[in-house]
Length: 143
Image (cartoon, rainbow, N blue to C red; front, side):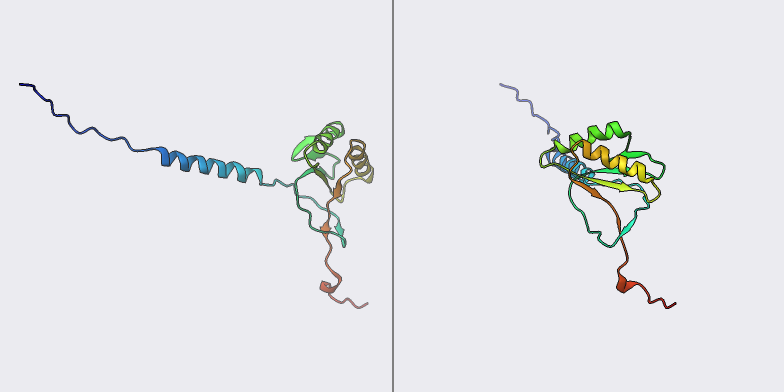
């Protein structure tokens, strides 16, 4: 007679494919969300009645009151600013350059920064301001 061994129940392993799918979807979500985060520096921007909202991909250049420069939150000098501007210009569709200059920054450094941007092909320059309060919202002041 042939002896047949009865096989015991084999423990089934759980299917991890759905868990991996969820993990990869979450990873993609956080990578994309991180790309859209903006980092800012507290600036004392000048007011302008002609301000308007700006949207789109840009190179953000910050001129601090002490004359230091930041490009996308990275400390740079004028020479490095030229490299950043040329790289921004070479991106597909070109990038606008947003200059955020502190009100207390020297006019000389402001003009030097604009010159460095223009000299390196930064023809799409936007100077950031804060919107000024409208005339209708200001209280009537009588002398």
